[in-house]
Image (cartoon, rainbow, N blue to C red; front, side, top):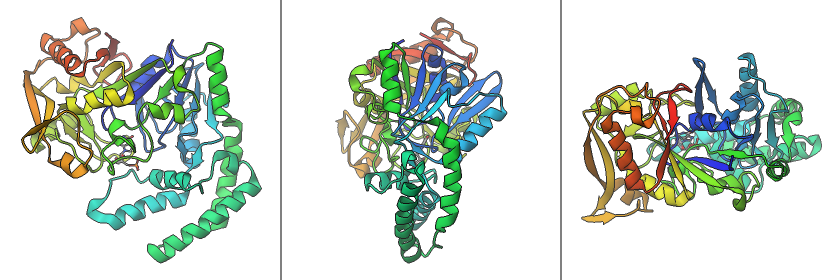
Length: 425
Ligand code: IMP
């Protein structure tokens, strides 16, 4: 099995968890490389739904090794809770199948508080974050004051770094936000307890991963969020604070680009986004309601209703370039089963001119007019299809047209949330 990066090619929530779950069967190691517990990867196995926020979805397969890479921001309380939740449901999680990079930055309560205070302060111009402290934690990382797992494991180093951070944050909290000051001892003690629990999982991830590749093992890189939430390439500033594109897989794990064999982009058969920012193909209210209900389009982490719209080929075409995508997985095709007509956005128009790619200027992006082509719907149940040939002819045509517009092969189609409801093409 080659080393594969799986990324979202839209605004996240494309169903990457399910695709990872399918591919895990043939891989040895699954690694998360960016984001944190803002993600919510849903996998349904044997009628049971599992939502993973930090732990790679591969954990559901016995015998696979999972890694949380250096590019991930780890909320220790969230991670320990997730480990405990899985164990209670009979899933083995031990240092033998879960490693956490000693270079991963940690999320502290002040990051979560700051995330919420900032959003509340800006009001209407807010990003619509998940409130998990992701942005403030990456801010500290870039400002070189962040605290990493390796720091946490050394009590004296941790004490010093936490003291510095709390002193600085308390000035910000009390003077700028008129919020209560933080209690150093409380945080120090609770995080020291987390340190004990996380120590056995702590690994030098680049070493572990590169050694495994040398031994002939294969790695699946599990992207979180999606291309258009990428800090560099997305709908900035309405993005997350990490590189959700394929390049992030190398930076966030310490595995070099020459070792990556393949990039699979995951897309929904339509489009969704959570949070604020431009969304040219967004549905009008009635259709929004219909698709949101049928597709259960509510955030797996925050339970917020997702905004829904038609498939945007302009967006995904550019994702293919940005990530070097060589294969596409299409999920949730069944959600469109009841649509008499399905539309695909093929071009954007702005001030009378056709645009080949989305504009970098966010205000201009909000003003683009999506140009659609319309296709007859298939008006038949696709959820039982076990192969491309078993799909209704109009659904086959829809997928073929997507392939044509994107210039990349569709290799996986998913038609429902269960593990069995998907097939390779
Ligand atoms: P943050 O990552 O919590 O800072 O949120 C920034 C933006 O990314 C917001 O629009 C969130 O709704 C969005 N976002 C973050 N994580 C996910 C995800 O896993 N799926 C979809 N949207 C996400």
